[in-house]
View 1 (cartoon, rainbow, N blue to C red):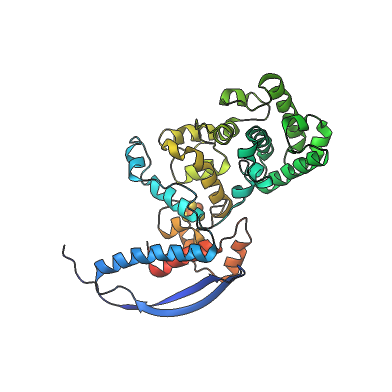
View 2 (cartoon, rainbow, N blue to C red):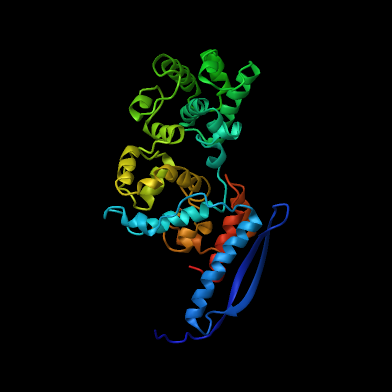
Length: 362
Ligand code: SF4
């Protein structure tokens, strides 16, 4: 292989050092340094960069304490096993979002519907799967047009109230049926459309008691016959409650981001987005695409104005909708502090982006 040795040049880099102290506090320092633009040996430098990248990612993870790879990456066989209608380079976006999601926590991770029952009572899905399924159903009914944090608090209220009334497992089908609609409404009064939802919860519990042995059914058809339960909820319910992977739960974030990345045609109907996604996305990603994109949409690509200055999809020029002006604006301490007051801590993501920009690892 032949190559021309790149011109060795120097340049000044303005940079921001972002690090975390032992107490988890964010430290930001501005500076300027001079470094070689390219090494004398282009090939060697590329290999070194890859090694640096790996070790830097590990260092960030060790320093920040978020280490687990939470979402699968698309591998070669995933690309080959899918049909030819896949959007170009979808997996690059998917894998990049999965990488970013390792660097921040979002409300959906602990207060999303499928997480709430286990957050309130760790291990519930294993210890009491039937109770977990009912709590998941109630969480899903409450979550419509309501933030995860508000849904979580309503679920806490229901659980505490019922435990105080002597029900050891808190919110169960039998326990909630001892409450009046007014009592349920009072306990969930912060969620949107709480009056209607109080009625839906009690009616659903009564229907399940009458027709399904007091358990949640295993099919989308049966579940969507319950009042206040749509297809998104039903697919999530059978995925998490029964481990049945029959469809993608498309919420507002999945719907918005899939259109923005041109993965699906423009539409105002989430059902169309679900069918379009299912037509090409390998099935193994169906259960995780919801929490993956929801968390990303809650913290990084928030509705109306995404935070492109901390998004590696902008840094790596993978997003067709990136705000380049914002992406190219250096992060200031004020901006970082403002971002960190959002719905999830972004300090690790700033570290990741800082590394990418500083080391030209993209
Ligand atoms: S619009 Fe910006 S924040 Fe959203 S995915 Fe694209 S680059 Fe990231």
